[in-house]
Amino acid sequence: MKLTFLGAGDMFAIDQGHNSVLIEFNESNLVIDFPETNFRALRALGKDLTDVRNVFITHLHEDHVNGLQLLGNYARVYSKNKPNLFVHSSLFDQLWQTLKAGIEPSGVGPKELSDYFNVHIVEDQFEIEGVSFKPIRTHHLPGMISHGLFCTPYFYFSSDCALDKELLLNYGGRVKTIFHECHLQEDVLKSHTSLEEILELPQELRSKVVLMHYEDTYTNPENRRALEERTGLNIAGPLSVYEF
Ligand SMILES: [Zn+2]
Ligand SMILES: [Zn+2]
Image (cartoon, rainbow, N blue to C red; front, side, top):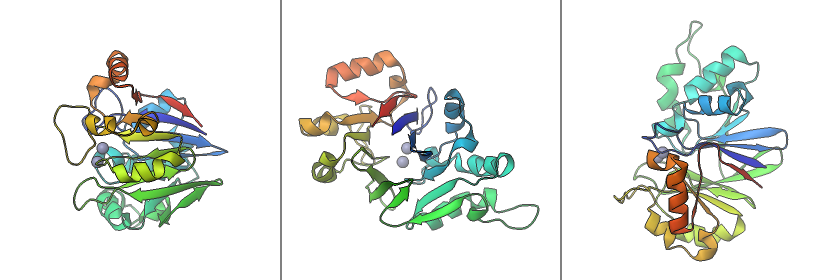
């Protein structure tokens, strides 16, 4: 299994793509979230949007879903195969409301999400090519549905969330790597995880953490290296690769 960061930037990132990963395994792949910046990152990897087989959506902030309309339309025009779209049951209606205005109208009558994607409504877990993925409800913003994703024994991917220390203490030992979002700025946001909170985790968890979803300052590899030396933590960069 190979996991590549298509982008590790936050919502306001310009110097690199928004936070999203491409996971390649067996004969398939899965992209977690789909910002429009993924198109350029896939091109940099020598891949095309039509190579994307499966997508899982963690939540509906624009930096995580604003490439879905492009992906669906592109597949309809350039590919015979629709991508699979894995959506948690609690998120499906809101996702459709988010995309509807752009993809429902067509020259041959109203279209549905299933005209663009093979839609899979997820409850507790889903499976692709024998690999199991388990969404876990997280706390991002009040009233917002958000999920992290476990792929045991390989990784946990937090997506955007406040730190759930109990979750990491209970289940972090079951995975090799914890890809965790971190707001690397001075101000502390309740909707995101601060560096201080990550640094307060026990060493056995800290050593597994790879930070992601951060502001442009750390797109610069020198700044990432300085922070890694200062904190002992790892930080994902644009197109960083992790093998499992
Ligand atoms: Zn975000
Ligand atoms: Zn968010």
